[in-house]
Every structure is written in C-alpha cells, then in structure tokens.
Length: 183
Image (cartoon, rainbow, N blue to C red; front, side, top):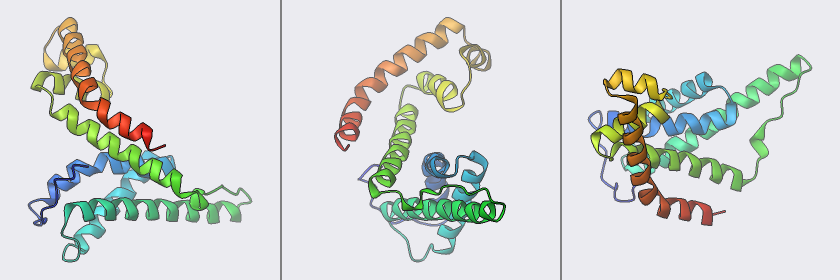
C-alpha cells in the first residue's frame, strides 16, 4: 500500500475507490485460508459491509486497509471453524489454521499487498500495455482472446506484453527485494 495515503476518507465518495483498490487482494488473502473463491468473495463483501457500518469510527485509509485485512482474516478463520464443527459432527474433521504462527499470517498479508501493488503498477503502465497485461494476467485471457477483444494482431499483443513486463521488472525490483528480505 502507498504510505502517502494518509488522508481522511469521505464516505461514500472514496468508498468505491477503496473497494476497487483492495477487493481483489483481500479476496486472494481470504482464499488463502478458505480455498474457495466464492466463499472468499463473500467474506470480503461482508468485511466491506462492516466497514460501512463503522464508517464514523475508521476514517484513515491506512487504518481502513489494516482493519479490512484483520476483519477478512478473522471471518475466514470463523468460516474454517464453522466448517470444522460441521465436519466433526460428520466424523470428518478438517484441520484449521487458526493456530498458525504469526509469520504465516504476515506472509499472507504481504502477498496480498504485493498483489495489490502489482495491480496498481499494471494500471500505471502505458494504456495499451496496461490493457494487455490486465487481460492476460488479471482476467486470465489468452493472447488470442486479448487480440480479438482489443482488435489487435497477436504479434502486437505480444509486443505490448513484452514491453509491459519489461517496464514492470524495473518498477518491481525494489518491491520484490523488500518482500524477499522480509523472510
């Protein structure tokens, strides 16, 4: 997350921006616990609903992100506990990571934040590179599908992909170094 985002949040104007900024990475974070993307999306949506209910208490964007991560993790663990209780009644006990060490939680949060930063960097690329990389890596489309949808040749899509990846390499080196050194 960008540390320069210390301004006070105005609801509902900034809520959409907060939602689009953090939704995907929080879904990945929740999914790392529950291993079901649909359940993870429900957890994250519930976290945003709770955020709206607490909008008068949480006004700083950094505090909001930390609160959303904590709420998402706690709800994911609650889902796992519920599933464990249901499974134990059926004699099929699931192992829950509720006792996982703090370093695993920190790693999951850092991974989610790295994904958020990667999405931001992709969107900051030149427009065509950004569109191509978003479609290929975020929307998980093939080169042919991307070319057809953007009405470009396959070679043009490959060129934008290569250029975008090269630009990202230069921007990501410092981030990856910090991330790798944290382990």
